[in-house]
Image (cartoon, rainbow, N blue to C red; front, side, top):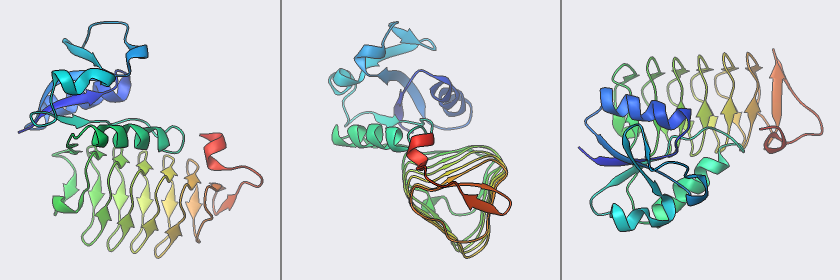
Length: 219
């Protein structure tokens, strides 16, 4: 069991607190954000500590961190916080719902937030700092790299490779044996049937690339 500090005070942090308290062995002891965003001394009945000072109050040798942030800026905001926490010497936990179907939890990296009703089939690995909201199907013999966000009811078929910073909208689908390039943004209900290009935006069924715009300009 780890004593955990959660980064953030918005909806995702509040949900993370709920899940950890009700469906994990971890104990949440505090929240933390950058000093400029602190308006109260506490959140959800726990101390709210400036991130700049957190290691002086909750030393890394005794406490762990969890930063389950949204996919804004194509997951790069969450990556920046992840790296800053690592630089302070903290270990980051992952939350994997007890209602998710994952036969080998050792294939999941750190700071992952995997909610209920996800199915991750055998021989697929999941990198660090990955979010999977509720109800996704993650097929066999695949690879999901760092800093990726699946919303809900996404189908990733077998033998797919998902490069870092990708984002998948609700009800999107990836065909088997497909490589998703770094920074790909897949729109809601879109179907990817072939390899994508880096930082591209794809919408439709079958999905087509939106011309003249990069994913980090849109989200």
